[in-house]
Length: 219
Image: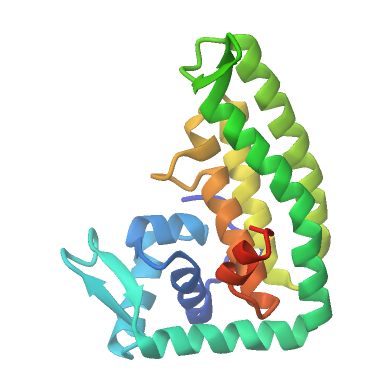
């Protein structure tokens, strides 16, 4: 079992929230994201499905993908609105603004991890240039230290953000130990995946949409 966050309790609202942000998720991934075990999360998912808030898309409950129904999306939106009220919309807007410089650094790191320059041309990074990758990983390490400190401060105003800190810490620790798939792989709870979900969450908390942020050049 993964290390618990806080008191280790996972609420029905926590599960609905993850489904709202991610869109689709399998049971094992959901348990991993929530630092819980599959049996506990599976029982709660059964209840959420029975309430008509989520549905299983193909396969069994152990292997299939879960998504929210329209009723479930409404419940998820209610939690976002309640968190916005608790935290304060001005705080949510400020947090989204404060994320932008970190996000620019994150994009530069992801680009550098995927591409490198050879004879003045950008080519796919095949990770044979150890110096290039080492420089990118150094930049990543500094970004994580800065971003985790900032996000930890935000969590004092909205406690559920602590889970993002824990997930980013876990991904960064895996990268540091040599498993660089945890930097950007779409198949696991990688740093890039967690970062994207954090950004999406802050956008929703601020009462905006990603489309609006993209149009404004902020995402």
